[in-house]
Length: 549
Image (tube, rainbow, N blue to C red):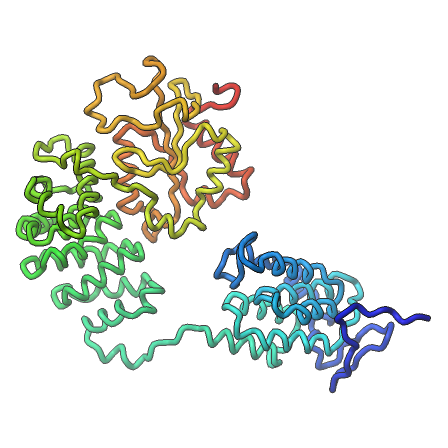
């Protein structure tokens, strides 16, 4: 009889010390020291096997770059071979074949391939009534491959490998588990020395905590709350600025701390410059929080009157925070809209950003302060407020729901019946804009003027800009994505900039349709999302398709 042909690149079984290897045609029986003794045990393998088989397949490419150290689908120089190797591992028919694919392709193996191999090994051993023969040398070689490469694993890959190794029955004191556990502990952030904290006084301890990079990367609300116990009068402006910046950066809407900052500002009014005040006021506007401190606004008005001509950019920054709180003082507006102030900032390096802020303040005066009769920003000085999506949206675009919502609208309405990322006067970027007739029919955007007239009160009553007929003026419906990062950390209050944009768009006549992140995250796949969008649009009385025109 001719011997069975061995596949290219495979190697003959090698004897291993302390292991009982199976001969040709014989099935392997586990020895007491086998790393798979728990899995193959008739009494104890059921629960672990069920956990292994129910573990979802490892799909690193869906998580984007940086999660598994790999490229996203379709991207990267080695995307094809890397994904091809993953498919080969998932379809391997024996443990030996798994090891061959890993050993013969060292340049194509990535960190996430090892949990794929471990999971496939468990499937091979547990999906059949009688598991296929397994050589002890194969298991040891697989362990050595993982041990040799685990220093390059990220923490997520290490956790997955640890979980799978436990399910497969690898001994906790064996070399594989010890190596993975050592790498896991190595990646844990170091604990701060406990002896340093009690030595420092309260103010210095607060400053040290807020200046620590680890504390800035990992905010803890319970720690922030505990800092409110210190009296503001005993703290320095530098410490309070660090605290204000921390609250604003991490969207922590902590009333106790915000009230403490407001009280500090009132008590230390005469010692604070406008450059410090702008940093202390920043979290109030960003977090959409108007403090209960009664002297907060009078104090800021006195500081603005005293410091407005000294630091123009700081003055405008303070007014921007107050604009988000709808608390603009008329006297300060008179000053920043005066010809002298505008001419003074024209030649400065920050002229463009100041003009952008002044344009937003002018829009707030137009829409929210009908009683204001002072000077305004000249039309030639006005610039678009937000000519492009905000930095936070651009930085987190891969986590946004915008792309899938756009695809849902395209399939539901058609590409010609909505506009995406359209900037409307005076410079607000809209997520999705629809033009709707008075009967509720969604109209092709190309046949309508998508912009409402601005300023709205400068248009004659009853006039509709660029409408085909005067008796059927089109409404503009704006779908507003409310992503998780558009809210304060508690997820209930919109950030000040978001609330300001929605407020101004509504005052200009746009009908807003918010799409909260909780509802978007609950949709499973595009069909559910289309059904969700259909219900949202129909609730407004909108029609489309053959019956909608």
